[in-house]
Image 1 (cartoon, one colour):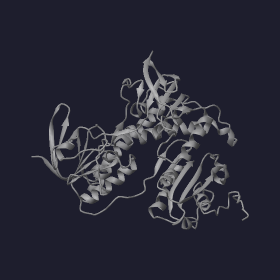
Image 2 (image 1 turned 90 degrees about the vertical axis):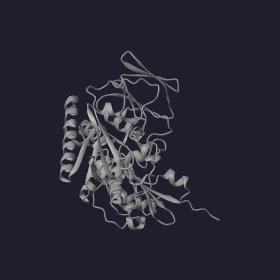
Image 3 (image 1 turned 180 degrees about the vertical axis):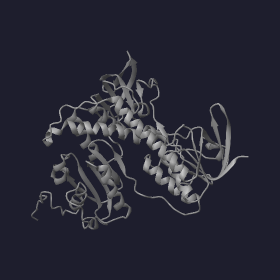
Image 4 (image 1 turned 135 degrees about the vertical axis):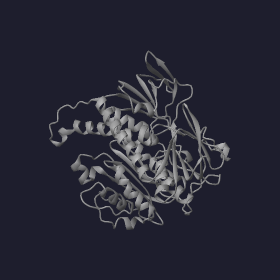
Length: 470
């Protein structure tokens, strides 16, 4: 007889495992099904955690190389790529074991195998070399995540034409790397690989890098990349790519040809919703995503979908928040999810962004005023030697509500949490500037930019006002 659970979660990424833990915490009997032999999904195994481990080593190299600016004689640093990879692997393994321990503490029953819906309330679990198993559940949460997009017609050799899945676990480094895609993944890899001595070209077919983020962030980051010698091309399409002599040759729309040892395809991700039995529950998809309402409910009663698979925000922390919301609703609580989701880009300098961009406000014809504070004026940034970047604040010009905060600079991915909390509370900018920030801290930049949005900045030169005689 099939085991029965109150909640079954399909997938153990940051959405799935958090949902399972929340269900266990709330007293439900819960199952979590994972097709891979380890928990954590893309974020832990092929994304957030391994990439940040590799970036941490690269950032340390970057800082040591500029030690002379601080009066420190550090010499020319070198690095050990296998040791860097081994450190990354150890961090990933530690986190995997942490999830196992958390599951045991919340009495989450785990199943390893390919889970598939098999009608209302039923999931079959297929294992290689073993008979399929069936479980039943009152409620099912789909947390199947996403996979890297590949470009149709391109060579499929993963040793040469790679996605982030392969690139994070390279045993050796290429001498020359072509990155196709100037989004978050492409920019993080460019920043990282440059410090490891890789010759780089980043090609983006859109008019600017980091599509979807505020345009001023992308402009400023590209200037940093240009200064470091990272070649950045926008409005450029790779028309053809071939494997030639153990490397690649790419022909661009401009007619230019680029040769490299490998190519990193960083053109986004697609939902992993294929072949999970959606049709057995009467569910369809839109562009591959499973539509949900603000309670994370799908069109099928008792089935929820969270994280990348629902397409609302392809971010690990969004998936975790979705998971908590879905479980609370599945267990009889009424909760709608409409929270600001911060974005983070782990380049150096970092990017943190939350709320509306200037482009979105203009498209919606929202009357806005903008405040900006460059870190070149900032005491803590000057002292720390991290003056690249700025804080940009967007306020509603009529209601004074804080609409968006966009940060390029040291610790921006931490600073954006402050902005996210303020947006959550729908704070007025006049109230923001009454908050006392510790001095000297990078967070003061948010206060200064907010003052500037109200034309009250004290640590910026006075803005010139032209008086017209009438």
